[in-house]
Length: 198
Picture 1 (cartoon, helix red, strand yellow):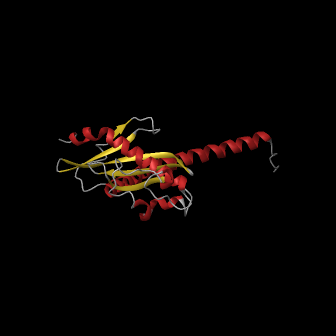
Picture 2 (picture 1 turned 180 degrees about the vertical axis):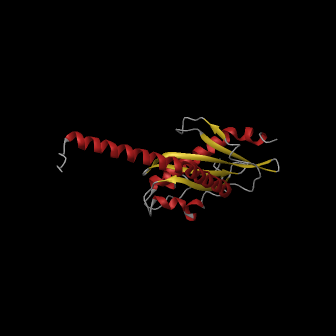
Picture 3 (picture 1 turned 135 degrees about the vertical axis):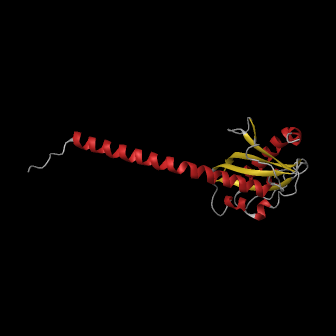
């Protein structure tokens, strides 16, 4: 029995077959994980909504309002919250591309008067131990109960009222910019939100 001679054509065909099998396998596995990934993303968003808003009884996810804006790449998502038909606040997703490592995306819960109920960090890729501290209570706590109409949402180095994270001023600036953009979008449509569930 003679040994097959290795040729360029044989090697190329083998490589093509391996690539096709690997590609189809990856595509199949990706399709299997799409639904679980979407469910996990939705659960994360629902948990964030519960964390930033007072008690509500409407279906926020189905009642989301999307606003086209020049500030964000995508439309801004606003989730109006109601309890027994009464407007109790709204959650707004704010974002800034000016973080030390790019995107900083947060969800800000506002009371009807515009003051901040709470903030949750949705996405960030900041430096571990520095910018990632934006998720900690010490930083987030300084935003609660503050109304951006009379509280300057900038870091103190820029004349604002927010103490920047030590060694992460750029991350802090991106966070405050995202919070300010969320407030601005909320104020633009606040009046229409309060009437939408009546």
